[in-house]
Image (tube, rainbow, N blue to C red; front, side):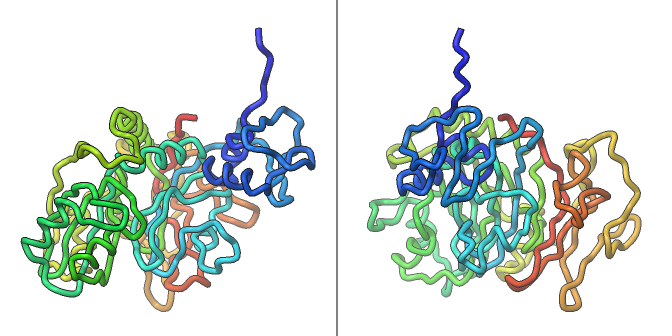
Length: 369
């Protein structure tokens, strides 16, 4: 019976929450990783008691008590999806989460909307490996009227330097706005597709990644993914392995039908100049969120508007709404001096990078490890 408890170095680094497994491979190739003060090589393994460091910074093994974190964040424009601390507007410092997390994929500096962050290197690896097989949905505003011909060309594929883009699902959403669902992730893809057809993107917002929707999460806010969202996402990732390899652009992957302007995204559409019929949305219930059934609290977040009302934090006189649901496990893991319990532990949203964002309290699910 084997008693070998060693694991691959890239997995060890990823599991610690330092970065994704792909990024760990790059660190190793660049000679920035050491094991017991010796530069590590790709394919190296780590045994219990080994001392691992990246750029001299010790990497601690993940403890059994550590819980995976999965976050949905509504990125503002001007924030860079990088973990580089030298970038003063990097997404990690902007969110200010007490645990080390990293973004899954990227969203252009000039773009806004949904991006996922986690400390689970395994799920990052799965998502990036299946990058060309899962859906990402955007609402886009351009500089001139959207025509039927434009919609047709965007749907059938546009020839870029890399080749003809995959077919997409495109719907006109206003005089100068459209909604597009992509199943591939080329650099600045939508902007370049539009430029090729003589259009300039004036505003671009991602509203969905697979089954995770931006919905009414305010700009600069974040929330935990629910257990149900995690279950569905893992199933979609498992299904994606049955399709083509992410590096090929062959047959068109499966697509789900896209409905025009779901009610939960009416506020997004109005930002793009599209008139919609406002419909009140139901509040989240315990039946569709993952919460600790033993953790009950009647405390209200700072700025609460009272029972049945939406609480509000203000920055410069006003601020977006937040919910007051408590995440599983008694709140966000935090350092001393940070709120980690009570209904809706959160951070204040900010319009600039020198202020802290506010967490819109959702629920934190236990991911499969």
